[in-house]
Each structure stands twice: as structure tokens, then as C-alpha cells.
Length: 587
Image (cartoon, rainbow, N blue to C red):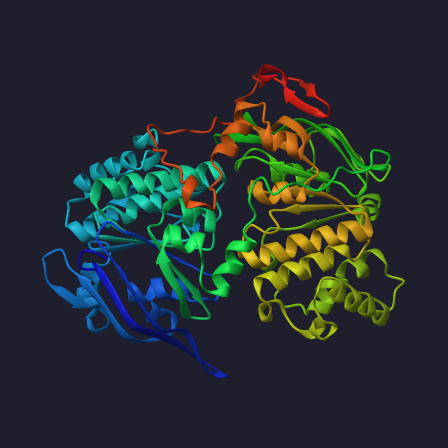
């Protein structure tokens, strides 16, 4: 580095006391960050990335951590301070004013019972001693600075009323309220759609360029690393295994772990699976699926509008085929998946699975029909009961649908399922918290396979996983499809993963499918403007192809809420090439 570091970390070690003894989360870590520089810290879950960030903020002690080493900050006034030896009163002055942090999940970081304006104003009042009325005016300016449209209205809204991308922008505004010299961003875009992610990255870069702020960016997404960083620090098991400038690290990684991380990154253009046999039987048909949610207001709770979450969606799936369903949050992807299983009741439409019509079935008949369709949820930890053993969780579908089986027979089936997904029968008596994220996703897959379904709805099944674990789960899903003839509806916002998994791709926008066709055609030769926008936003894990876009104006996704009596236009799909359909207005 040509200039003195803004932050210098030397021999940082962090440990936690457990019943089994001390666990070292970070060991002898040293790194520097210069003013205006972006340093990315990458590595898989458990590598020590977030622990390092919390240690720099001196928040790790609140989590039970013990810290040693030195963390030296060059302060705005010109002096330096070792944060590890600093008093809490001094740390409160530094946090927000000189070092700020964006946490991974804004919904858990924002107070759900306070308005956005109140939370932003509170930051300014505490750190800048500004009167409340002036602080609220400042909050409006902060909202406008991060390109959130209609700032005055947003101030009176609550976190749940904003989209994920908007909430993340609020967290950025809060972190930048006091113009810190160092911003720590801990996985700020992991759960965001590709278009929102691209906007957030461009926004952070613009604000960084304007203020000369340094950025410590924590992520496991190597495409994001290539897009935003100047230097990269690779961590594994709490230790730094490699550090280098961005281009040399990608071009010639020295450590085998870095090489494995880069090799595991799915890239658009790697190719999709071969086409499914046209003679394969159809196992799922969806015709004119509609799902509306009422919007009620007033004391009488009158319905004044409807949310058109899914609006006239039709598609089919053959045995052994994967249909990738892509689009931004709120486009109707997950609602479609849940409607297929009748976890939510469709408003209109016809769903046929393995020759049986799902719509209109009573509870007993529906329970029997669900044997042919199962679901893998995005968060396996939330979908597995923490109080039930793995044996009970995996065999629960068998207990419901095949009560004639003895408990021993069900346990034998569960043991075989665990072996099939790469786990051991010895794991049956363990509990979800005793497994890693990748292992829990394998357990969720085993549970979905218990009834030998024809169709599996996979709702963002790998989005929260590290790149190497993600690659393993993708390969497992493909192997199971080949062995068992499974059909997948694969819901995801990761376009490279969709390409790797899917034979065909359907693109959803505002509750409608706007493009549908073979993966290679849709992803390489998109015809609809919305599909092109999605693909243009995908971060590319190659510094040579780094994008330099900036946000010139806010983009707000159209609302799917329509007053009673108003309906959106339902445009038909037109075939523009063999098996490739595009909504009529764009065809």
C-alpha cells in the first residue's frame, strides 16, 4: 500500500468458551486497509469472516468472544487508537462516526415497531447531537442520498412495508449517516435478487467514490468480489490463507483452497443439461394459474384492492426435467410453488400432477395426492423442527402417508435416504443444530424424497450456501434426478445455477411468465427486455469483465396491487423459435 493504512489489524485472535473447551474462531490474523480502498474478505461459513468484522467493531465480546492482538485505527482528528484497549465510551464515539457496519439481514437489524424515519433520525441524534426535528429532515436527505424514491412517504413506513432491496438501502443510509471513514459490509447482498444486488453494489461504489471511504466487504460470492474489490483476503478455519490484489488472485491463485473456491463458482455460459426425451411422460401441468390476495382497509376491513401475485401462469414438466423459475422478489415465484402444493389456495386455474387434478380436492384426497409432490425450502434450519431428531423429521412424511409401516421399517428407509444424500445412518439420532448448512440441506432433500414423489419444488435451495457446498448440492440434485426420474421446479435468483440445473427456463415478472424456453435460448438469446435486464445484472467472477455502471436514478418495481375493478393486461405467449415463447408485446 502506498499510503499509511486507515485500519491496521495485527495478530487478531478470537476464541469462545464452550462446554467442550475453548474454540478459536480467528487465529493470528493481520491485515491493512488504506483510505478509499476496498478489501474483500472471502471464505466459507465458519472461516471467521463475520467474527473478524464484529471484532473490529468491538461487538464480539457481546457474543461471548475473547479477543487479543491489536486493531489500530487512524482517527479523523489525526491521532491513532488501539480499539482493543479502548474504553466503551470512546468506542461509542467511534462506532457510526468513524466505523460503521451494514449487517447481512436488514430485517433483523431494523426495529419492526419504529418507522424508518424514527430509526434514521435516532442515529443522527445520538451521534451528531442534532435536535429531533432537524434530525428528521436529515433522515429525509439520507433516504434521497441512497436513491430511495418518494422519500417523504418512506419516512413514515415500517420495515415490513419495504422490499428487501429498499431495506438494505435504509441500512446503508444509516451506516453512512455520520460519513464514516471505514464501512464494514457483512454479506450485504447475499439474499438479494441480481438486479437489486447490482444496484446496491453500484450505489456503494458511488458513495465510496464521493467520500473517499474505505470498505471492508465480507462475502462468499466471488462474482461480487470481482465486481467491487481492490484486494482480497481469503480465510479458512479462522486463518488467512492468501491475500493479494484482485486481478492476480483471480488469474493465478496460489493456495489450493482459493483455487477450489474459484473452481466451484458457477458461471453463465458453462452450459445446461441435455434436452429431456420428448417422449417422456408429463408429470405436471399448470393451466391458467391465478392467485390474488385481498387488500383490506377501514374499520369494516372492506376489500379495496387485490394483489395479483400470480396471474394466468401456464407451463408443464416432463419426467426427469427441470424448469428454472426466475425473477425478482415479489414476481410470484414462491407463490407459484406453494400454490402447486396447495399450501396456499389458488384463486383460479388447474393443476394436474401425475394425472390427478389437485384443484378441488378435499383434505383427505389432497393429503394422498401430495405424495407425488414435495418441497425443498430455502432455509433448511427453519424447515426442520429443532426439537425433533433427524430420524423423526425424515420419517414424518412416512408416518403420515404410510401408517402401515412399522417404526423400524420407517427408520430403515430413513437410513437408506441419508446414505443416498451423502450422509450416514449414524446421523439419525442427531438434531438439526448439530449439522452444517450444507448437511441440513441434504437432510431436507432426504425428507422430500421419503415418499418417492414425481415432482419436487425446490425454492431457492442453494442460495444461502457457500460456493463449494452449493456445487455439491447441485450435483446431488442432478444425480437424484438421473436415478429416480424426478421433475424439478427450480426457483432461484442465481442465473448461473439456474443454467447449470435447468433444461428450460421461465422468467416471471409481475405475476406473469414473460419468457419461456430452452435454457440455452433464454439465457444466451433473451428476447424480452426484462430477461435481458436480469442477465445484465449478473456479477461475473472475472475482474477483466468488471462492470462500471452507476445508478443515475432510482428504479422502483411496479406494484402488483390493483384497485377493485381494475385488472392487468394478460398478454399471450408467442412462439418466436422452436419451444421458445415470449410475451406478445415483446415478441
